[in-house]
Image: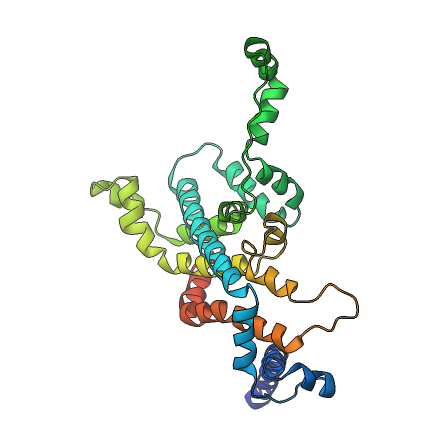
Length: 305
């Protein structure tokens, strides 16, 4: 039986066009709205065609809002999150695969369990720890009774306090530990020849040299793929930057965009200005995807096993 390839191609092409319209449609309306004035939007409703005010609205975003500072905060958070997550995941997967650890399977299962407990679920406990990073130590001293002994010896118990709220460290640290990157690197390491590590040892390469000179260059596509994914995740993170930073100068760009909507009842939002801010904020992740798309696809494909 000969399949009708022409009809299959026609259906596939139609589905592709529908997918492009579904994805690009809202983007087009965003850019079109950002290129008009508020009076035009209030008078005409949807902006079905582009206008001439896009650069002017972007200029207002840069000069009248804190979006530029918040974009810098987003860049610091996203880049540090991507670099920290990629490095920690690489080292964790290297230890699980290439070292003889008795409970390696249990450790890997616990790492994967972090995927089922994202930051949005544990945001309250994360906030409590970030408000005082020594609170777990204080709790251990209280539970074990050491604080009572210290109070008897020195007259007062130990109570350490250090808050990382409203700091870049406080925004970055809770985002780094995640099991997805460890799973990605582990799957890639399992695709490599099993005798590769033994051959490196026969040539006199220790674990550190094997990791830096052999394993890391082979993992560059997986590293780049995970870097892009975690960078986008850090850039679009909303809930934790909203909770962990209370001042406009420490908030991220996504939170800043939400702040552009007026809180007062009856006040009309400046839709073109908000859409111009969305376009401006989207330029950084879109540029990264365009530059590293090849590594993203290769890293995800080569990691499958």
